[in-house]
Length: 119
Length: 131
Image (tube, rainbow over all chains, first blue to last red; front, side, top):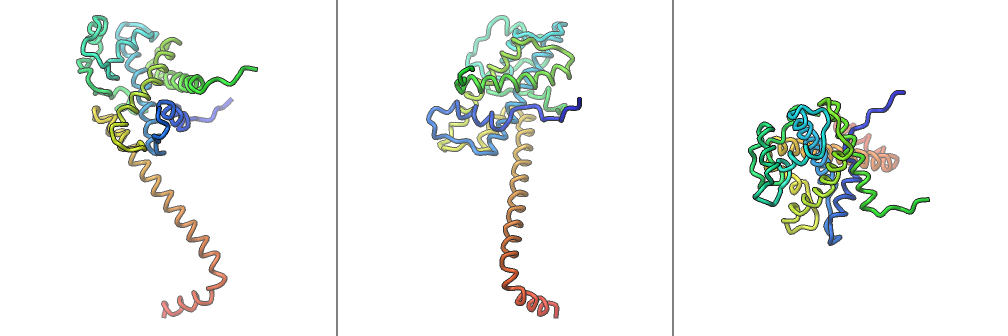
């Protein structure tokens, strides 16, 4: 049975509701184009997290990606808010190429596993 | 019949589904498998990350988050910023094209309404111009 090709990723409506959920004051709005851009950001964020976690698992010669692999790559992607890292994070970061990043920003470079190769 | 789920739970389910689809794509590309717990973890992180994104957007004293605010989120990574900027430009171009289409439609409608009244005047003016 043939399936129609659908774009994989977040829908604009879902993103809109997500953003409104996080607004506490109820007055802040997000314009339509900003919603679409946020949608792209979230798609990239999820793909990049998944791709890096997969890469981490492969570096450990594993074919299955587990939560620990996500935990290891997360500091590269999000602000931790903490200068100190656990010993596990410090030891794991060395095994992934290009991981000597300062965890001071929301999104760190290189953010390129998925973007540079294209969808 | 199950009662209607509260909104956050329904949204989380929607996010979980989408994250599952995206992870499936990555799994096929990288030839790996993602455990269910991994997909749940990424889903939870993504759900919470929206809140963090918004905190950063709120620095400007405006009530509406715009594309410029979203672009600021990407400023720390040059390739991500380039990607988001390209998408933003595509959106702007799309908006302009749609505006053009609307203008043409509305002017065509106006011409259609007034053509019956001014048809004679128009043909006269055309003859005048062509002369």
